[in-house]
Length: 273
Image 1: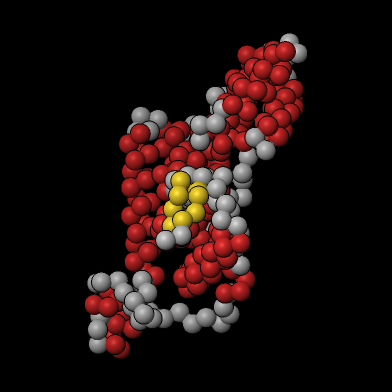
Image 2: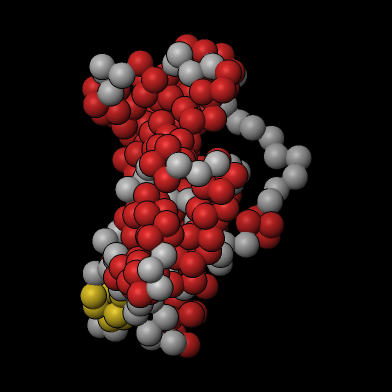
């Protein structure tokens, strides 16, 4: 049986690659609001094009992490080909009543169309995953009002000013709360749900995956130049330190901190390619 080298699990058959990527692919398609009725077609189309790519180049996924493989797969979905207009929504209850076999729709979770899984069962699975993830974070931050409100903010449509006020971070403290608390909570929730943001592929994703060699190389380069300020900024980014804390530690204006952080981000993105 033909196998292909992958960057996350070694040699895998195409069926094993498909099984490994399918759950996260469906989550990502829902995360980016692809039409629910198109998901099965998009799934089949994406893996067909992935098979074509692997047939042309067996090393196509050789250096790809699982996250990168999902990004490559998403790029091959072509959702515009499956966008349907004037779609009529059909009630599952109505289908059950008219078919005379309600178990096919309401209990087992399989409908017509060759045993294709009904959309509502996937929605239930996603909701259960979301509830478990929220409960995990709620228990983790049960003693921190700002973090609990951040979780409330990222999972509801509450107004940001209202949420910041509830967290005790209104006014000038709102920006700090959004970057230092809300952003990490959102990233934790995405990690628990295995929802990777394929639109952003910067150095931090590779660093968090355990690759710190490029970071150390950039630090050593600035150490050879005696640039202690930039070294402090690089280490601050790696430690996810807030701008306010770095500003106080370096004793420089906020505008200088912003400039140094932008420079550091650019250097790290180049180093991590």
